Amino acid sequence: MTAPSIVAAGAADRADWDAYVDVHPQATVFHRYAWREVLQEGLGYEPEYLMAKEGGRVRGVLPLMCVRSRLYGTTLVSLPFCAYGGPLADDPMALQALDEHAQALARERGAKYVEYRFLGESPLAAPTQDLYQTFTKAVPENIGELAAVPQKRRSLLRKAQALGLGVSVDQDVASFFELYADNAHAHGTPALPKRFFKVLCQKLGDTADILIVRDAQGRPLSGMLNYHFRDRLLAYFAGENDGARSTYANDFKCWQLQVHARRSGRTVLDYGRSKAGTGSMDFKKLWGFEATPLSYAFRLVGVPEIPQNNPMNPKYQLAIRTWRKLPRAVVDFVGPRVIHGLG
Image (cartoon, rainbow, N blue to C red; front, top):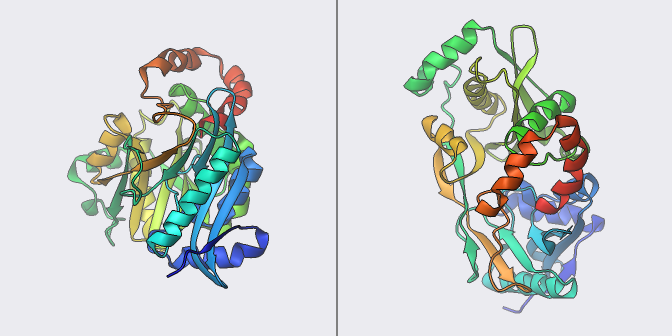
């Protein structure tokens, strides 16, 4: 077997790219070509999409984005603001060729590292960061019945039903963004710009939707932006307001996401990644979701060790507390200018 050629993929390669992704067993929704447009147009990142080819046959793909940050410098990430990514390949030779080309690109651009966000164990002999776990659950066919729900959650759902909670499923970015931005502010993190979610829904079409829990008067309480891929519904960006806790809206949302998955023909709900030891991880376990460690692999090009640029780093706690105290109008203005470098 010979080593494949590595080429830069563009719009003319879209059909071949997606055809390869759609049959690869390790592929995720984030590997599809549309994410190049979402991240480029929605957040301004510079795409570096690579294909490993032998003759006319595709042997591997690697979606990369160049992230430039005044705080953290330049990096190549597969992919920013996506839980999963990394190269897909038919064989070790194609994987090696994609990896080596990515490292060469990093050196050309003065990047500190290349980051691959593998779903599951990394296939590379490279340093890894095991900060996150992802949570999945097979959705019972009868999930619409309370009997299919973990017993300790049923009473909360009955209370939510008694309050008249309901759901809408569409692409109501305006309502969702308010919930999402409120949630980000409460957690002390900058919010992605509304434009990003508009571009995302436009580019992903019917493979993305937004589920919003509403009170008896139709007012939004809690929401989730979701992706559909193969047998999975991936519940990804979340949001809630102050009324969610007292109305049991988040438990109601978790239940209705499973109902939505089944109605959409999906058999698995992926409730997204969480950091170990956090409240969101505990919530997912209460609902019966099973954890899978995520190994994010790093090719260190311009730094000696993996930078700890994440909210669990104690040195960021003061910034998080300060952000929470800032007025919403201030964080709405400053956030999109800061978040670009945090993907």
